Amino acid sequence: MRFHATTISRVSQLKNRAPVLFQSSQLRSNHQKRCNFGIAFDIDGVILRGRVPTGGSPQALRRLYGDSGELKVPYLFLTNGGGVPETKRAKELSELLGVNILPSQVVQGHSPFRNLLKKFENELIIATGKGNPALVMSEYGFKKVLSLEEYASYFESIDPVSQYKRWTTAPVSDRKTPAVPRYDVFSERIKAAFVVSDPVDWGRDIQVLCDILRSGGLPGDANRNQPPLYFAADDLEYQAAFPSERLGLGAFRIALESIFNIINPKGLEYVSYGKPNPFVFKNAEAILSQLQSSSCIDHSENNGVSGSHPFETLYMIGDNPSVDVKGARQVFSEEKIIMQNFQQTWLLTLLRRQ
Ligand code: G3P
Ligand code: MG
Image (spheres, rainbow, N blue to C red):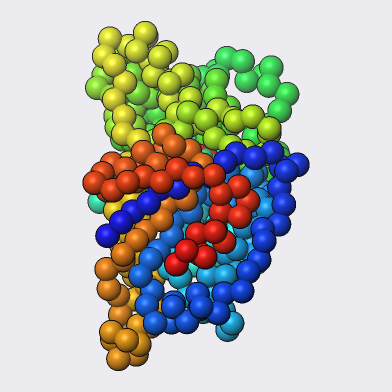
């Protein structure tokens, strides 16, 4: 099986243009016969920039479905972004891109956190990042999760500059912080910290995470062993709507680590998920196989019965060589990595070759 990682160029939004459409009758009959490839799409910089679809991506994705909306080509989104549950992200993407995307087709940076459920299901944990990180963790099954924002609100003066912040991370009307903590945060230690998505208030988060991590999970307490710390991704930069790249989770991790390593005798210990973690790519292949067996009918080899057979090729289409390409290369090192400039017609060009 070949796993190709393909980058597309980062083009200015002003240059975005609709892709050239082409007749695909041969493509359709090939897929009905044999569905021997799958595709993993990066989102930021490939499918979307910010919340805006890149030129032609909705039209291109529609080519992966049959006339009655059935999936012809197994594909999924493999993004280091996140902050909302996969069910919600699938709904948002469906609306933005005009195709019916299943939650199982959305693999976000924090999706692997599900695998830590056994370890922390009933333990007090905190989650931080844009969106709704505590909801993400609750939907995975974690029973005692607080957002870092809520947690910090119970500790008076933990953020000594909070009164100078004229902005808020949520409208006051949306804040549901209970006056009395839901858990005994003043005696119960935090057992793990999760950075679910790009942090919004770096200063507060670095301060509070240092407090939690140095004290063994109880801010203000004496130094103790560091509780586990997990990051959903480690992207230094990513392509958002701004013309040049923006600092990502990896930049936040570097800032936290640099400070922690100066103020704490022992260096920061952490695990980063998301691409290029090899687990993510193996998991993507497993999901694509499931999609293949439920969506593709191979008349020639299975007597018309749905069933999966090994992919001949898997494509990873990303815009970040150190994340998207590096990850695919680690897992499928024997294969050649293709780096090509597909401009805005990348997917159509790819499909034409099948
Ligand atoms: O915050 C999103 C960013 O880290 C990268 O997202 O879709 O390019 O993997 P993506
Ligand atoms: Mg990207």
